[in-house]
Image: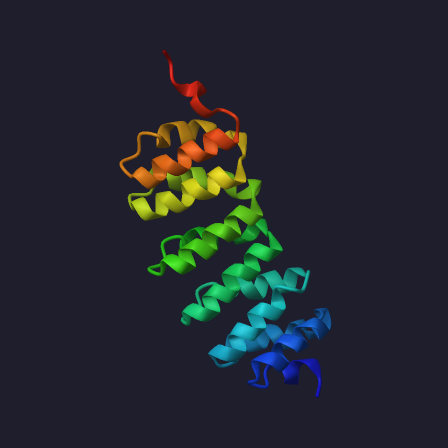
Length: 185
């Protein structure tokens, strides 16, 4: 059997082993499986596309970022984080509002992996989103990215209505070496 047959065979152990044999030559078939396959095939396709360093892999994953199956979306979000592609910022920000806290956390983690290119958009979310759980994810991402351009927004977030937003703002400021310096005697 070839690597794609093994990947989509229905046996998780065999599919996992097949991932090591996947390369860019499999990209068209994986992109097709990501849109036309059953949910298990789409999940394995997303996992495989995470390993292919090619703009086509990123495009296929971006197109699947709103997959109706939560497990497939989870695999796609993780794959986008592994690619660290700045073009993934917008769909990842959209995923911060997912009703599943697990998927929102995966989107946050992916944004953290992308790093500095995500910072301006995360600042906008932190300062403008009405939903506190979304602001918490944005504050966490900014804190863990540690980009100093977020310092003013994190200062403002110290007065957020959400204790968790305040917590992550404080953590981020501490990480960036600002810490308690912002309190005037």
